[in-house]
Amino acid sequence: MLAGWYEQCGPADAVIRTGEMDKPVAGHGEVLIRVHASGINPSDYKRRGNVKVPIEFPRVVPHSDGAGVIEAIGAGVTGFHVGDRVWMFNAQWARAMGSAAEYIALPASLVRPLPDALSFIEGACLGIPAMTAYHAIFRDGPVKGQTIYVPAATGRVGAYAIQFAKWGGARVIASTGSAKNFDIVKSLGAEVVLDRKSDDLKGRILKETGDHGVDRIIDVDFGNTIEFDEQIIAEGGAIVSYGAAAPGKAAVTLSPRRARNMSIHFIFIYLLNEAQKISVCDGILHAVAENALQHRIAGTLPLNELARAHREAETQSGTGHMVVTID
Image (spheres, rainbow, N blue to C red):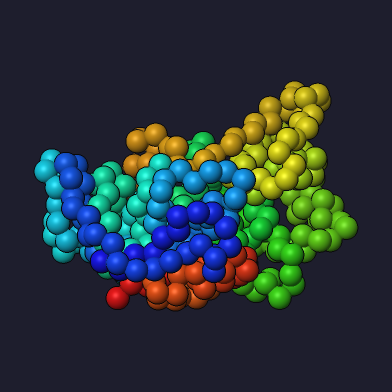
């Protein structure tokens, strides 16, 4: 089968190769999937580019997300049939073999039905980005009537977070670093879109909430934004952190903020427990069934251009998903 891989970390053009590998087989509890689309996430290209940490396996086929068709079913698997259209998540978590290949054998617990309304390319976006966004919005329960603030609104997770929040009955305030993106963010469901670089961002957010503050913040840069977040969070509000750039530490104000029952949640989508995985995936499929989601695709490239696809994914932040196609 055709696959893409790297055997050492470094720049995409220097380390990524494509060629033939042995086709896997479905073991006990696994399904064999003919992959048609493989989604690239920041965790994929950041790990590939991180030369400071030794590579975990002699050869890594990257990517955790993807979509395709079940070709074979291993012993002990129920609920799936050969020919089913499916999407996958966590495909390369703690494994050498990810979805950047013609075929992948995966535990059936990491596979879900792909609705007929979605293409394989759209299905390849439902893993890390959509699951992170859904869990960030609903990890504490319903959000109807809440006001949710989503910075980084055009990012992969941010765009889904806006849509899930809107679908869940929340009012969404979003911010973006470029005025040219205002219409895009509004089309995703944000009622208020602000300039993240504005000197009066705090004042605008508080004004939009009648000085009450926002009930939930979907934060991608906790270490650099906690001081700001503390100034706009409502009493009893929650900050949900799904990502962090430098610095690696953050100073949290204990008093008087603690007395206002603010909570902070750190989420890492790879380590959801089984009940959470089921709840998140079922919720995503419910939203899809109700036609509540747009899937922002920045571009597609064939598997034999995997290095180029990684380069473009690294440089197209805020424009949507970069997807590798495998015909």
